[in-house]
Length: 269
Image (cartoon, rainbow, N blue to C red; front, side, top):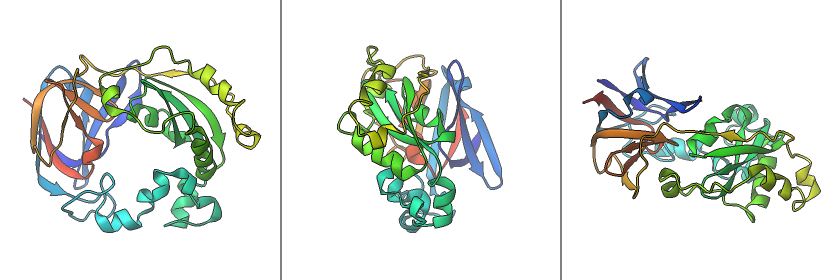
């Protein structure tokens, strides 16, 4: 049995995505190769403790995927521009923590297109590719544009929202409801004719379409969402992993990222 604080699963893009669940306990990290447990029965137990991933203090409720409320309202990692990059002020030397913003947001960003049942537009840092795509459960993705900072990437994303969603339909994603007819390269270059030239100047010449395969034995037919707050012990056969979700038997799914900061135990049964 392993016990520790949940952080989002680490991913590596191989023939199938390789997932590692890291449970942090004091100075130790228990690294669990989750692919090894697919097809086996596992148990996850939550005993009621949540600790803020920023300050470490115990909190009754997790805000913004792992923060206590004071950190949620003050930490740069939880600022509004994380969700809405067009509001970023890092390029102006401003923000909740200007030094943090300079290191993380006043840096090159990619705008990308990702395919599931529809085409989705998103923004991420260079080093978060392909992690960001995997976390969203994309079946394929392509780089659209390369901007010098997060703000400009956000402006471009907003311009694209008239054409595409920036939200993932997580139920369809988990059922593997994919539109095989989507041609991301064709969609990308059609946009060049529709957007203002001050935005298309950032278009990337990299047309590689990255295909992503997930370690799944069977996808749920009707998604039943699980959560530790209502069900502190979750067990069953692990049918697969997609995005940041564990897929169990009986069409049950557990969003591990939603429970960032929770103290849980993990064991094979």
